[in-house]
Length: 119
Image 1 (spheres, rainbow, N blue to C red):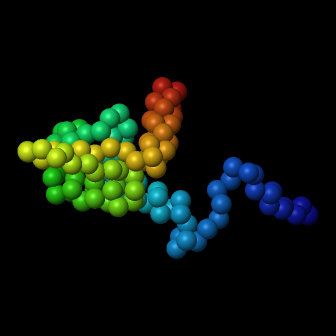
Image 2: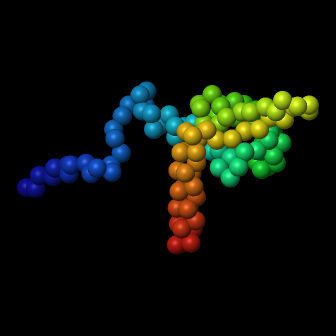
């Protein structure tokens, strides 16, 4: 009779956590919400005005874009800046935290491209 034992977890194995207190799950859920990651992705290149961001995301409504951007600002990933002249212009850019997450999204893009090429 053979007794199987579990091998010790490797250093790169996911950490076990309960959904209620799993920070990674919270961020994955947030990024998985439609438009959040795509809006961040568009802002990795340069700051954009609202209309530019909307044009970069075909199919998004102004109402939904307003909600998504507000969520990104609330999470500290995006900075909102207003001009002091008329007409007022509002632009959005990545915060330092947003840039750090943007680098992860760029790595994901590179992985997806390599994976598609390997098929």
